[in-house]
Length: 112
Image (cartoon, rainbow, N blue to C red; front, side, top):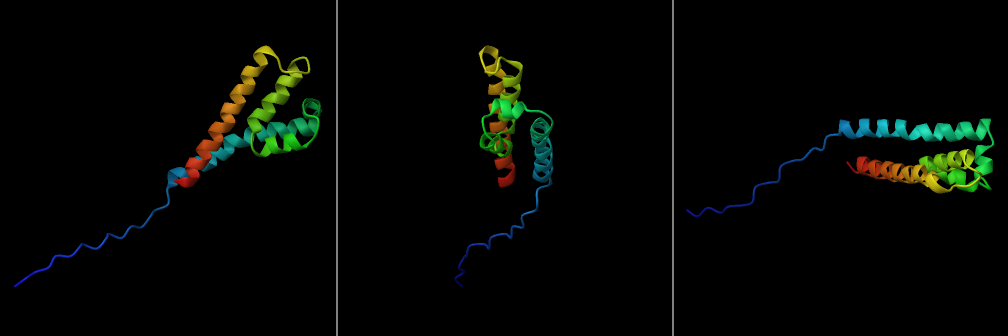
């Protein structure tokens, strides 16, 4: 009697939704809404954004893509002498790092 051996069938894999990634996205959205609310407040109640930016296109793109950088640029513009010089570049650099971090974390959470 000759027996032939065959490959075992692959186990069925049922992906389960990851609760951690959903909670992470909710928390990330909450933290990402903070600078956007500040930008809306600056736009509605002051002329800070109008003074820092010459038009509406860059603040609108900054609101969507890089809110921390947009907010900190307008803030540093307001507290300085209508320009960004010296130590004022440090908070702006922190804003760039925060925006990049939010984008990287959001992409990783959406992939998971």
